[in-house]
Length: 287
Image (cartoon, rainbow, N blue to C red; front, side):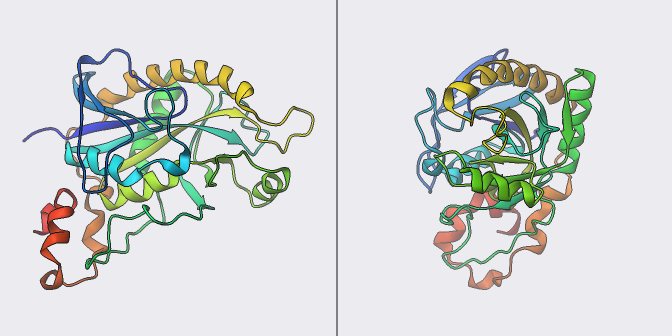
């Protein structure tokens, strides 16, 4: 049996993975349009890895322009069963200074563009279980690696996903703090929802770059502030990935890998053939 592959989605500052053996660019076509960029195939730590820069090489794509469905579909079609999503975030709590790493276990959705947050529709309805939106197993492996590397981190926390591309107002930042959220970002929630629908175990490495704008004794977040931390975070992310990838299981038998067992509500006899064909990489167990 072929060992399932591992997907890496790179965020701001992480546009390539060093150390990949035999790296090859792959253009993947999907029914949902093109992914953010070509995927890079290679091996790392003896495992098949596919890397995708979320914003495209050179950071050309706004958060709300990202074709999340195409990105996750492309990874699923290549046999990916685990995704490590690397992302830059603003801190909403004093205890998470810049360069701290948060492994979110919860999300709060403040996006207003719902199209593209699900693969289903067009005759097949699914309501995915999403109470625990990230993979506890994958977070545990990441936390263990971060501990071994003696990197400051928190295993757990709530990521609030806003639209962007503008950073928060002080009012928004203050409300997010009052609600007890930990970090704020613009991209990760749709990835987590779609990965769960695709029966992929996903965890997020959230690298803090700033204090958003709630901390009035510091200048509010801006691109110049963020860039310096991004460079250091990218170096750290590469080392974490290099260390954690060999520890990921060779068998895809975690709860996330059977998420559709209790999600599909439309009777199989009613599934349109066109939709079945479109979603075959996701629905192959049921076809």
